[in-house]
Length: 586
Image (cartoon, rainbow, N blue to C red; front, side, top):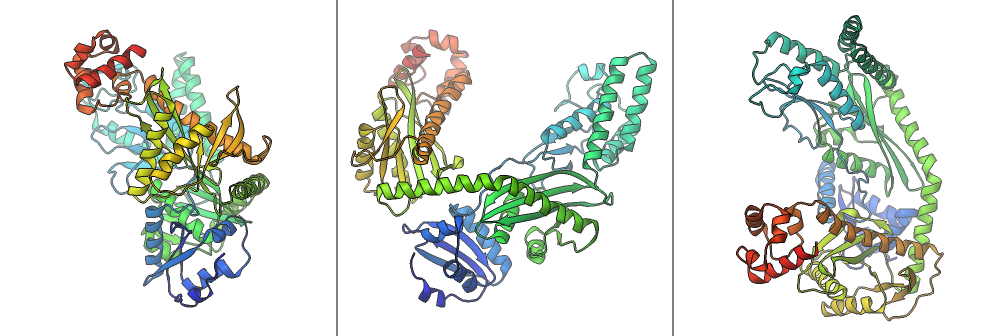
């Protein structure tokens, strides 16, 4: 580790953002601080463990940008994280958006489950978020069966089945009673805000009517609806004022692990929660960063956000433009403690496994560094190809950081039809990948993992040397049964790695993943079964030519029956030849 004593002495005590760099000048961590000097000193003057220890070992230099306020430093930190995607900053492992129930404000309203709602863009009523999408869909289905709302996206010329089964008022053809429509709006809105009495009374009334008419099937269906509502409400209701609408976050930290709990409360109902455990550099900063990333992905903000005492409420209010507070007593304080208790229990349940897994990973990484005699090995990239009867190759690249997959950095490649073998396909993929790394100044891997032995390594070395890049390469050598048996370095030497070691297992996991990714890419294109998707495999056919082919032939059967000359009427001769061969092999 470098000695930064002199450089640290020059760091101001003002707020700002700091950027840690590795030996290649790549930004590996971005943080913020009220006092830059104090925060930066803390990395190099105290004992650190786990993820922080790995970060400090990787630091070769640091930079900082002074800001005039802590809000500016927070905004700058988030901006730089988006720009550089540093490997030691946290990522949302579960990057899905939570659904909302949308009740449209149209003349004839609709009720549906929606995702990816843009903040302040929707003009409709939105209720949620619902972490349990099944519960959201079940609620919408129930209300759509109880109330004859519009079901179609566009009004049709004739009434549909929903009208005949009394689940639609026939908005396309019939004169709708506006008072009835307004009553439905009021009742549905009231229910979604937490007042279940009107809907429960309505179900009980319809259930009684169905029984009197001896329609026992409908009565049983309504009875099940009623039980679902009561069970859900009993589970979700907390002892709060019906007008309470807020999100609440709390966390628990232990040994470089951060357990986060985010509660969603709407009209006194705890409608769900989001929870996650991450490895952490700085608990409070990471929790705030996590919160910001969560609301970027799920952008409908609550009316109020409740946070623990350590958070800077004023800073978050300025950033989110909503009320942010810390409860000090009463029911909300108890709920804050409950969130922390949940976070602690969640972490306790997983901590032993997490520590064991991380310990095994770090041990394997250190073993690999020693075997290859390199300073750092964190980012690894691996490649594989897939093809159709030796033609029409596609390639796949997977990325692992510290033996953990980074799926948002996986890449797919369509390969030139001139390529007729695995080595040619691999040459093209590796050249395209690392030419782009050079031209766009992308992050280089610490190690390239080839799916094969001497031949594969030799192909990769030729490209890497031609591009004047210095990236170590290893190959995973297969035996006669096509199973990985040995690890070979770029000098074609077999490394002393036992088959039952953690390092061997982690490397074969990378190999299995890239193989799965490449094959899945090829299969997905073929399994779609449409001409449009199948033609994506044939280089030389762009969007315009694809549309012309679809227009002229219309079906896969007719295109397969076409001669090479027929195809050449639409595309040039070389592409027609490739397309004819491709269709013949399907």
